[in-house]
Amino acid sequence: MSKFAWVTLTTNDTYSLGALVLAHSLKRAKTAHQLAVLVSPNVSQAMRDRLKEVYNVVQEVNVLDSQDAANLALLSRPELGVTFTKLHCWRLVQFEKCVFLDADTLVLQNCDELFEREELSAAPDVSWPDCFNSGVFVFKPSVDTFAQITEFAVKNGSFDGGDQGLLNQFFADWSTADIKKHLPFVYNVTAYASYCYLPAFKQFRDKIKILHFAGKLKPWLIQFNSETKVASVSSEYAHAQDLIQLWWNIFCENVIQSLS
Ligand code: UDP
Ligand code: MN
Image 1 (cartoon, protein in one colour):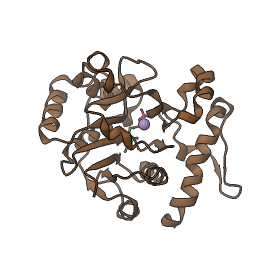
Image 2: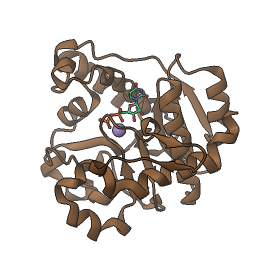
Image 3: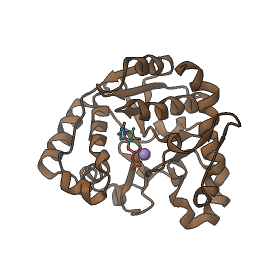
């Protein structure tokens, strides 16, 4: 068995749909490594059973809330407090190295080479490239690091109220210390923000390795016609139509039958 694992997180049955599609995308990309999912107590038993069909490890964790309502309100994303729960990933010490993937990511090509990178490797955030985006990152599980980050969080909070602000404060030299820890953008391409640079999105479309549906419009919220099996994407997101459709194709081919 591989000592490396892909790790994601889900705190409810809706994000679990993302986790299921993500797991199948990893399998389609023929990863050699294990799959682990952190689930909070809210995830139903029925959903955990589905997750167990594709994940090697389904680990229950407590919800760590940032309790930083003011900051979260600033972000107008109150639901992001639960992303502090991500920190539990450092406790998966049965693995030597892991790659965390948000449940709203989709792996388009084999990325097993990511395990050659060191903690903390991540790709730049599109809105502030001197910060990394915490939807995809390479880390080394360690109870010491977990304790250090949680202690740091209690002391310093998070400048954005979520895990991304916290992790960027903790791994503060990411943007300057070691270029090898800068993952190429193709490992975390934000599906919706790329309209800001649409020609690049088109030019490098086939090089995308991991797509990230960051933002409010998650693929599972997009209107889907169950008869024609076509996802209706508004013109604003037309450039990502085929990728949103791919999420739904995997959902239809690999996930839906296990849910019914
Ligand atoms: N998450 C979750 N339940 C929630 C919100 C977030 O399980 O209610 C997890 C899930 O893995 C998700 C990640 O935390 O992908 C980060 O949140 P999200 O992807 O919504 O943030 P964004 O990438 O849009 O900033
Ligand atoms: Mn995300």
